[in-house]
Image (cartoon, rainbow, N blue to C red):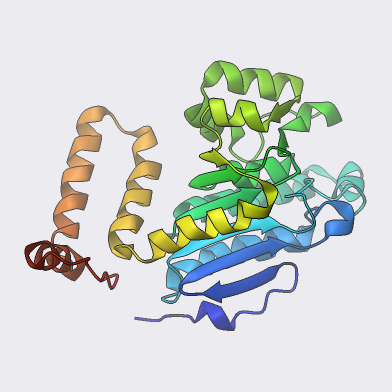
Length: 272
């Protein structure tokens, strides 16, 4: 099967590191709170797409440099050009940004966001699309599209966010564009944990490492079912999970776990 070595990738628009099967993406324009551009959107989309072919990455952490996660689309490099664009170009852009979220949900590796400071607009959507989120007390999350005259239904927000924090809370955030504090995010289930700034990346990477050391095939199956079962009835979901679990029972990792239990040792998962 065709595989790629993610450790060899050299993205142009963000920092990329692979260590012990954990990839870390760092949005790296700290002087402007790490805004996204047309190019960085596309490169992130393509990176998450390629991860399905990478055999040296089993979990991903995404964070921002300089005390902020991401301030959203760059005002000068994205918002300005969009104002003068025809419908064809606008739709091409909005479909491209949506494709980033699709690739994040479809890549088999769990994705963990480490969020500090501002996480606004598209910079709030990206953590929302991750599998888990860790924040700092200073994290300020705002789905602020309405503040620039746009709808809150951007990049999957109306589909994904209610499943994390509920319909009423999502409605408030999307209609008002107000900031969700770190404390609210933790209480509402948006953040898995809130930790001091100096511990943030370490906390996210520790969770990613624990996942990377686990049964990779089974984790990928869990992510697939979490994503696909949004649109299934309970009966359909039960059958989907029955098939998924039966497939996992054929893996070598399942047998390794059993042998380790019998031998009273910790299983050494290999991902197959």
